[in-house]
Image 1 (cartoon, rainbow, N blue to C red):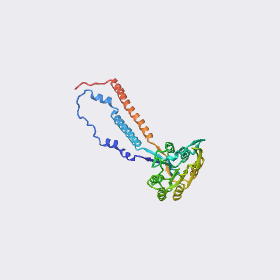
Image 2: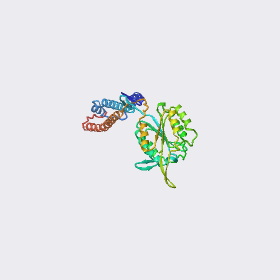
Image 3: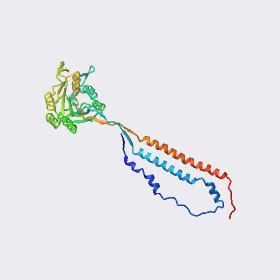
Image 4: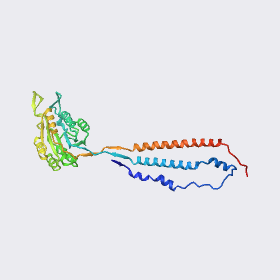
Length: 351
């Protein structure tokens, strides 16, 4: 169907007609300012109705101008062709990722592409691929150490979220770990979103050692707000380190509080997942890929095509014709004048 963006413009249609109807006519001058002895002869030559032609020409010009005015108003009203509604099904959820960047994430107990790498480097690589796979989800990124802050608000721009994750640096938010504060910040960011879409993926390698709220209190608040939390514990079980007498095996994940992470997940309806190496971390994120997306209401889109260029172009053509008519009329007037002057005039003696 055709709709008008500014239909009120059409009320200006009768303006030219009103101006013509109520304008003051040109006053005719009565009497003769100069007596011409051969006036009757001139009138005879002028016979044939140029005055009638003049009125006819003026009428044609008026209607041409009136049509141009109407067509311009049609273009100004911005007609649009609205097509049939097209359903755009949108699936996905609002998914926040909270990544630990405390000092312990610098421990090099992982391998990446066959080379030794610290935990954060591997998380950037594996979580980055996870982000790129989350088409249809709105993603957000929270980084936390001794403090928690939003690195990227919820957005459909996966490339930006990935870039912000790559720019994360260890110790940027402090060396300690504030898991509770990170959960609390995410709750605040997801509070305005539908309950069936609120998801948090929390990754850490330690225990809560900082912050104003405990992880369990934050998890209970998340459960009340309908935020489902999936917790990921990262870190190897064994790692060889140099010592005074050669090398020895240590547990680099001894500070990982798995009990708290499991309880957080249970309280909120999520799952606790453990990643001891790069492959397991990749498996963890692929397991998260299998989560059922929360389906949103389908959005309707109606294709719109602007039609105003057609009346606008037509008005330009009519305007060009009008200008050409004004240019040709003086030429014809001069031609008629020459023809009149070439005819012999019969003069009568002056009285």
